[in-house]
Length: 125
Image (spheres, rainbow, N blue to C red):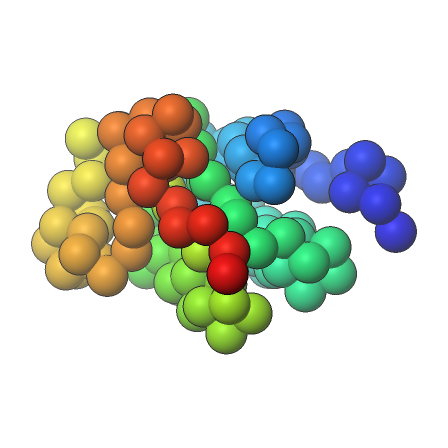
């Protein structure tokens, strides 16, 4: 299956050379959205499509709960296990506050914007 044939509900995908830029298409990563489906779509990028470099643009996300954070952490871990890397960018202040409070701001790779995130990702060896 080609990435171009993947039509996720919660994600907008854009190919940037060897990196997939993932736009999160919802403003709440809470139980108000189907977080299972959201996670399935994110994880498919790694497990089904073999993406090894991801930039996740959280610019539209205004709020994230612990369950939403769990999906981001799981994505980070899956990328690491598959020898890939992920960088999250365009964090709104409320989302950045949650990441700081939970001390995930230093665990997850975070950048200001997409160009900075692309530059921050290591090249695959």
